[in-house]
Image (cartoon, rainbow, N blue to C red; front, side):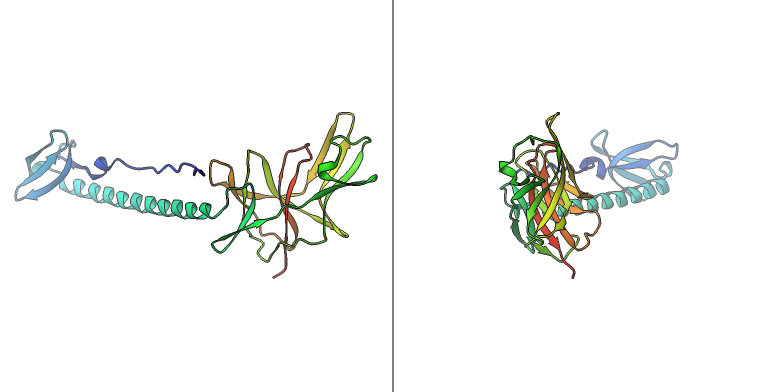
Length: 257
């Protein structure tokens, strides 16, 4: 079952919120649940003694009491408004999350309906030829450079909104982002590679754009979008582990409006 991240609401104690400081002319005060002026006396319910009491009106600093009570009530109303807005935002987020499937992958919302993006098969191109990513040897025999590419000059997933939001559901904690792709003929370059056989490493160079991300659930559902509006071009949502050559790619195109 998908579990939402906890949202902590800062709540004032209800009982304290209703209490009033009944100030006296000597500077002290009585903590009262309520009070009322009756002729030359003030009748109040004492919080300390849990009973109704009376005190001469001339011993009460009524102006200070009323001024602070009004300010206190205004603060309570503001807090209540903030809590209501936060609760509304929480409910809207729950509705949003419920639309996204729990299966690992990348999604986007078309109105209220979630659309799934398909992963792209990648190949590694070197001066020795081209190999499907799943079949390539983890450590190339010779040093050199290469590129990780996907077929096609343009993505079939076309958006006209450079501020498109995506949702990525991970199966476990992993790095992710939005990469800018370069079109070269009938292929798009996802990242540049440098092979270092002596140390048995592959250096990967993704052209990542700055993004915002928001974790929506504790089972690794994230909402991601570019910090700046993406100009027309080829892009991909990517999930990866640096140096492991296990990049997962969900390509898309931002087209001119």
